[in-house]
Length: 81
Image (cartoon, rainbow, N blue to C red; front, side, top):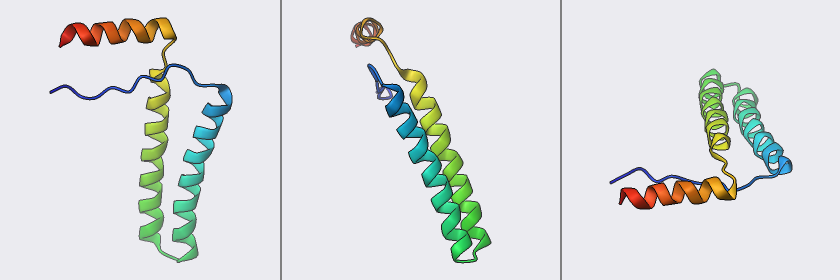
């Protein structure tokens, strides 16, 4: 069984900015909760989860395809099965 692949056809600059703002918001919120509760452990966990979210958002944005490239990739995947 192969790993599922997400193909993003097109994303506007506004959508990219919103994606990064939400990732940074998650990062700040998680650490902020740790600061508000005066919990060093929660701050570290928030930082680790925040970095993970930023990593996922960064790698996800590298898989954008034009319509022609997406069609080509789908043909390659279909040929493999």
